[in-house]
Image (cartoon, rainbow over all chains, first blue to last red; front, side, top):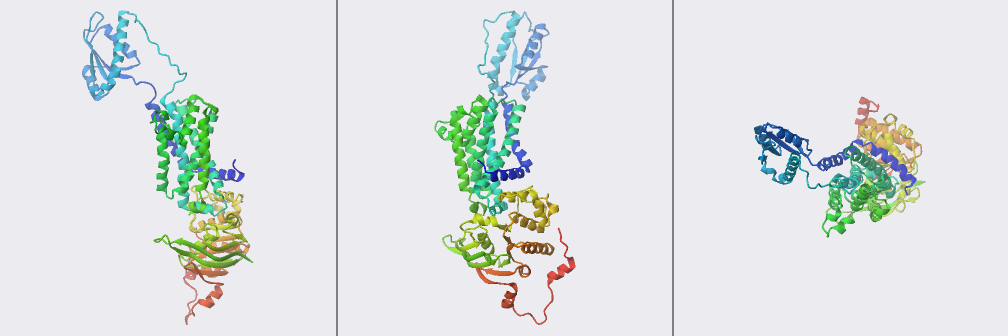
Length: 363
Length: 254
């Protein structure tokens, strides 16, 4: 539990850190961009296929036919002249162009519809063609008043929709938390040393553990504000759903922040220059980005790596955050992750206080 | 009664080119500084002045000898010593974007104390700068502020490391007045300097160091009597500093 001195000092440091509003908000810039890109890249809906129609037939049937294609949400239809649409197809503004022949009418048998495509998009075509054919068949059925033999109904058994962004967000928050924390303590420590601030602090009778605890608490408050902004953006602007309990979620966030702030302190104590702390920081940060199940589940990794991946601090934190956010897990049901987090909590704090020796860090 | 007692103090560092061999940056210094004294340590660069101070302040390990401040063994209990000393370092940079009064609050918090920041700033003549940032202070103001920071714990001993280096004469004299004021209130002051006038007019006793050793220690008067060469036949009266001050006045510049 924090002592009175630590709390008082944390309050003073917090006030000082809050002065630097620019860096507090600029460090949110990247995660927000990141989330937004993923939200739009994977919004779960198929883009409508751009279909140009050249209607050469004056008949009412041809008119109805193109009208039905227009009404179909799968297609974004442009009506136009043959030459013009062909140019658009070449330029890539249309995915395909459908030409209805002059003799296209109710009475015509086996009228040949012509489909112009760009072979460069063959891959897309293999997906689109069945769709188009199916639409044509159903339209034909309607014209001929034939009842289909069977229909297919799809039912989603998952009660809520899970997009990739929903999966990604807790991991992304965990990752952001790690970055903000390591930068917040580690990089700052090196900066303070360079300026001689650490030496000045060392002249006072402050003990390393009080110094670390108060800085960590003050930084934690800042990181919590930053993450809250990110969560608000995700929930309000990007429509991400967080199923679980917010109190449990923030509990994990606070523990995670503590761990990475302490690890940041270790980095700042070991690395003596800004370049060195960046390099060592990347050694800590990068493997965790890829191995900790931030972007895809740990289970999809090679068997050999999984045991190592699972014991990384970010793995425990991101797994716990994801279980709560996506599946509404209670703290009790994620006990294994919690245990891992608790272990790292102790390791990180003990390491930080051991490595942060005033005499060596300050000079 | 001496408040600082130093006996055979030594600090050794590995040689830059031969790591297995050592040289002594401070080589067996013994000093006794009385309570209420202004004590100056002089010496060329590299003589070991700053290292000596750093050992007394608990910033640097003591490799040999002993140092006691107010009866406390510095090597055994550095944290207790830090409670009763105030230190002004050569480099004085602080956190960005933080005002003087906030910094003083921070330093007081580091001693688990609360201070009247205005009273402290008033003491060093910076009351009107309470909301200013250290970056916007002049050299003299910066030095006075770093003395204010060193006073948050109302120390018994104040260490000043080259406090007037880089200051214009007005700021320098102003700082000397401040040091005298603090000393009159009973504070023991230990300072290093390259400024001979400072040593002569401000310090009650002076120690001169070279190559890590103490080569002379006495009052300025006695040192002059003992070591200064005889004056030339027709001495100049005054010096360039007197001329400078006569022409530019004593008014403090910001």
